Amino acid sequence: MLDVKVLRCSIYLNCLFMKFWKKRIYADAAAATPLSRSVQKEMHRLEKLFANPGGLHREAVAAKKELESARMRAAHAVGAHADEIIFTSGGTEANNLAIFGALRQGLHEHGELNAVTAPIEHPSVLEPLKALERDGLYITYLPVDKEGKVNPKDVREAVNDETVFVSVQMVNSEIGTIQPVRDIAKEIRHVRKTRVAKLPLYFHTDASQAPLWLPLNVEKLGIDLMTLDAQKMMGPKGSGLLYVRRGTELEPLLFGGGQERGLRSGTENAVLAGALAEALANAQEGVDERAAQVAEVRDYLWSEIQTLLPGAVLNGPACQGLALPRGGKARPSDARVANNLNISVPGLDGQMATVALDAKGVAVSTRSACSTADEEPSPVLQAIGAGEQATREAVRITLLPDARLRDARAIAIALKKVADRYRNVVH
Image 1: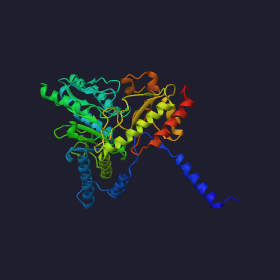
Image 2 (image 1 turned 60 degrees about the vertical axis):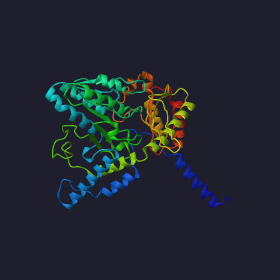
Image 3 (image 1 turned 30 degrees about the vertical axis):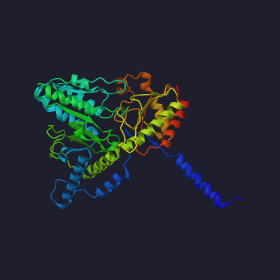
Image 4 (image 1 turned 180 degrees about the vertical axis):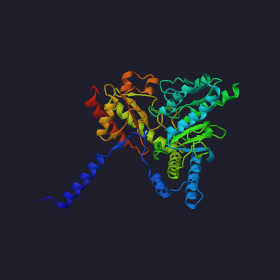
């Protein structure tokens, strides 16, 4: 006769196993990340703040105090001054503020100006620049190599006497390329010293994909403008910031009551500002060690995929990994961001693979979530010379900070099963 206790124990263990087996693996961190526990706690602490920070009564003063505390904390995390931090509704608004703010007034005054950027930038950089072509802006697109990297020397050669704005992202969201931002800044400083033009020359970087994986210090980077987005670093959606170096003159994008140093009118959201500051501070704390750990998982994932699917192609920079020297700090990779893997499996349509993997409990994507034209070939993959087939077959895997080797193994196995079933099936 079967022991009831043994049966109950068996059922319990089986339920635990099934719960673990069905656990979903989220590997689309480049699109959005979940709220960390500390950010959730910070939002809960601040959620009682409802007053307008511009008021004079106690409730308003309390909101203002938390708003400015968040500004100071965010500034400290990136080595900036508090008055250089402008809170926005996210990375898209911050990019638009940087671009329209730096260029629009100058175009009205001079009629024609130049901006320099790369064809693999985020749409929230490329589209505002294209919109300003109607006002006389002409754009110089920098070439990128097969890894998606910009040559700093090309930046110096591209800048002319009418160039007032250079924008090169810190990390590409699709293929994970880390751009040599500091070297580009050095070239721009050289141009400033030598050119005759009296126009300003500002260097902007969209660093939305960087905080969890790369150390950020605006002085060391040598930038004038930097975009950050809370949802990419375990913070809430609808919250971002633009770093504006002292002396950088911008025109407002939103007009009204003159909040945020007159650059972003509208009642400030102290809760979201505090959550962003918490997320940014946490992201920068131990960033090298975190990157090293996740790069190890990413590299293991790629090795497993290569074993199970020998024909798989890596798009973008090589997976060089990160080193943890004995007794020293982790060394960040200078090629590919730690959590990114972009691959093409011959014969497997990328969109079909994404849907099929989702059914197996694995969330990945094909390209930037901010692009609605999913049927169009990825401009990023086209720019690095990936063939039409590889572009159509591309899948982007971007790991969260808590990714483990077992997750990598599960992703590789799921991809193998999907490939075995759906290869050469017309989507």
